[in-house]
Image 1 (cartoon, helix red, strand yellow):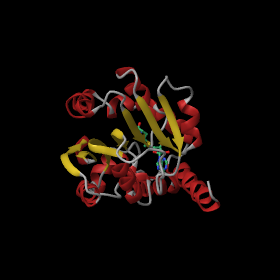
Image 2 (cartoon, protein in one colour):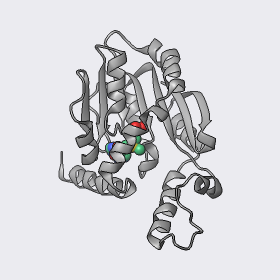
Image 3 (cartoon, protein in one colour):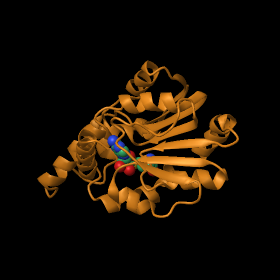
Image 4 (cartoon, protein in one colour):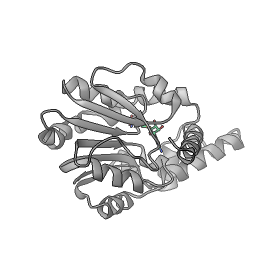
Length: 232
Ligand SMILES: C[S@@+](CC[C@H](N)C(=O)[O-])C[C@H]1O[C@@H](n2cnc3c(N)ncnc32)[C@H](O)[C@@H]1O
């Protein structure tokens, strides 16, 4: 890695450490809440939309894999799969520990990834709750497009813009309680901005500009998240 890439990776790690508050705790939270994001509805779509495009020796790419729980779930379902995560936060890599056979994690910054895949070589890519954590997702979307096979599927789930009231109604902090500290208020309102980075239509716009074809765009959890499934 050259000096510039190393320095921007360090900047990204600092950005993420701030956003994740306590890294080890957040990595555990990602494990504990995995079944909510990758629920029955997700696996139904997996069977209906993703499984049909898996080749004999499938490659599945998980951007911002966190503790790698999705990689292990895919390996359990598809023996022989190559399930590759991309991640850069040290506490996530530590939490991933030893992954099952067929799984690996590449350490890279998604702001400008140069992934070790040939053009048109990946069957399915996933980005779950990742794009909102980035300054810009353009290079990642372009890299996914390059790596995916024609007909390959890209699944995106993320926070999308929602009104402040809706956001606060679901926060575990009463911002109008005078005992709530200024630090807690600041933290919550900074996260409100970060979780409101893109609307669902913004994500679709970015994906379409990258030449993906949209198959599905669905609001989730009261409109605070969106599920978008696209095809190359
Ligand atoms: C909210 S977590 C979601 C983890 C996992 N995808 C899931 O849904 O369980 C987002 C993950 O993306 C990673 N991430 C965010 N921006 C990144 C970047 N620029 N480069 C590499 N990883 C990044 C974070 O470190 C974090 O582990």
